[in-house]
Structures are given as structure tokens and as C-alpha cells.
Amino acid sequence: MRNKLLYNKLTGLYGDVLIANEGGEEEDYRICCPFCGDTRHRLYIGCKWGVFDPITSRSNEHLIYCFNEKCLNPDSGDIATVDERLERRRDFLWHVYRGLNNSVNLLPAAKKTILATEPLSWPGKVIRLDKLAAKKPNHPAVTYMQGRGFDPKQLGEEYGFVFCDKVTDQTYAPALGTILMPIYRNDVLYSWISRRIGDGFEGTARKVKKYYNCPGRPLQSVGYNLDTVLQYSTIVIVEGILDAVKTGPFATCLFTKSLNLGLKKKIVQTMQRQHGDCAVVVVMLDPYQDEKERCRGSKHHIEVVSDAFTGYIPNVLRVYLPSGCDPGSMTAAEIMQQMQKAARKARIRLNFTL
Ligand SMILES: [Zn+2]
Image 1 (spheres, rainbow, N blue to C red):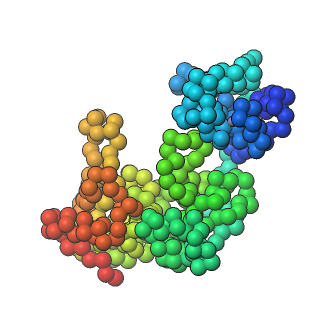
Image 2 (cartoon, rainbow, N blue to C red):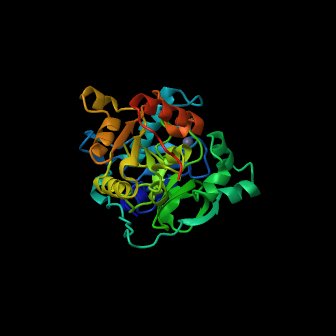
Image 3 (cartoon, rainbow, N blue to C red):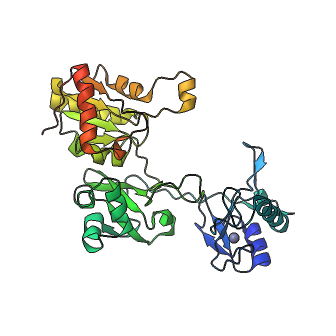
């Protein structure tokens, strides 16, 4: 437990306190919310609650959330008026935080790292997406992926996507009830990324993150599906796994907008050796550029990544998708169309056959 002082105070004031994500960066104390008659411990109080943050020069008083959303949170609600909710917060502050210096007793989060050389297993009980689809065609994990234009059968059989319905290790609690996308290296499970089912979590609860990466497994130098991808003489570099899956078996991803040097080396060496003058690298990262970067006059990330291959790979093609698009939200045919259009303009021949 990271903040015994806060925990004890909450126990004294509100009785039974549950701990979520114990020892983690986001450890929370859960109490039955005194404001909305909640009996399910739906009021979450972050272990850093009230701790002064030197960067923002404020204390972390926002680390409190009642999952009966309309109860306490300033951004939503029709049960209580804004003033009422603010008063509730002040009330809460008075009862809990007064006289408590949480910084003093806050222990650092436990660092759970897994060595890259250790084999990895799934965080709990999983079922492959194709098998889930066959058993429960209306399961949210199945219908969500279908709604995004993916075929659960293909995701399961070809890409090994699974649904996680039980975690055996609490370290991986955020993976529960999510879709896990495996990353293999030399046919061994190296890591996974968890994708929550659904969209539009932004700006609701800070708890809810769309993606969660297996801790302790850096991905930038690994690439995605490289063993297969590098057999093609034309490869496509996109940003995320779902972009790669949508694009095709010749697509790998960076997991970010920048190119890791080790990954570049691996791609360049393999392509030079196996494909020589026929090698083509297509760079099709999400076109959206960070506003700050743009104002600073920084080079567009698509340019940066493609420039890194120029001189090493005979043909490098930049594809700028229409603004607001990313491969994951397009159909495979639309993606192919965009790539061919850019290729014709640049007089580069794409070859996606093995
Ligand atoms: Zn409440």
C-alpha cells in the first residue's frame, strides 16, 4: 500500500476501504460514495490525492472520481448542479484532506519489470478471437472489432488476437476484459498490447485508457510481424498494430511516430540482402501532426521516417492519407488505393506478392 495515512483516514471516516491496483502508479482507495448513496465502493480516491505537484504548482485534488458519474464530477451531471458538486468536493476536501500531508507518507510505486529475455505468457485466461466469435457471435469484443471493419476470424487465426476474461496476476489488472494483441519475436510471444473495447473514453474518467502495454517490454526496436513482413519486397510502415493488420501482411508498425535506430538497421539490412534494387519502403504513418510540433516548424514525422531510409533503400514512398484518416479506420481497398495513387505520382512500382 502506497499511502497508509490516507487509507487509514478513509477507513476511520467511511468504514470499509478497498484498494485497487495495489502498489501501482495508479493505486486507488475505493469507498462507498457518501454523496450518492452508493453501496458498491464506486468512489475512487487516488493514492496521490492532495499531494503537491511541483510541475503544476497544485495539489492533485482531481484524483477523485465517483463512478456514478453524475454525482461528484465537475464535467458532467444533472443530478446535482455545478455549485452543488463543487460544494461536495469542498466538503470532501475538508473531511479527508485537512491536516493530512500525503506527500510525507507516499511510497513510490512498485516497479514490476520483466526481463526481455524471459518468456512471456498471457496475463490470465484468454480465448482466441476466432474461437470467441464462433462460440459467442454477439460478444462485445467480437462485435466491436467487426464494427471497425475487422474480421475476428482473421484476427484470431492469423494475428493471434485474444480476449482476456480473467487476470491471474493483479499487476495486469488493466488487461481484464480487453482484447490483447500479441507481438511475437522469432515465433516467441514477446509482448502484448491491450485494447479496451469501445471508443470515446477520452475526457470521461481518467481511469479508462484505450491502450495498455505489457509493462517492461519496450516495443520500439521490435517492430511488428517483421519475420513475415520482410519477406515482401515492398513493405509498409504504419503507426499501430490495427493499422498494420488493416493494411496487410506486408505492413509493420512503429508503435509511435518515430523510427528506432535498431529497427531501422534490421529493416535496411534484411531488405538490402533479400530484395536489393527491388526493395520499396512505404511510409504511411497517421498524418496528424502535433500542433506544437507544427508551430515549431518541425519536419513532418512522415518525412523524418522516410528520410531515414533514403540512401539505404532504393525506393522510399511517402503516403499522406487524407487528414483525419488513419489506416485502422479505412478499408483495405481504400488504403491500397491511396498507396497506388502516391506510387503512380512518384513513379514507384509496388509489389505486394511474395
Ligand atoms: Zn457518488
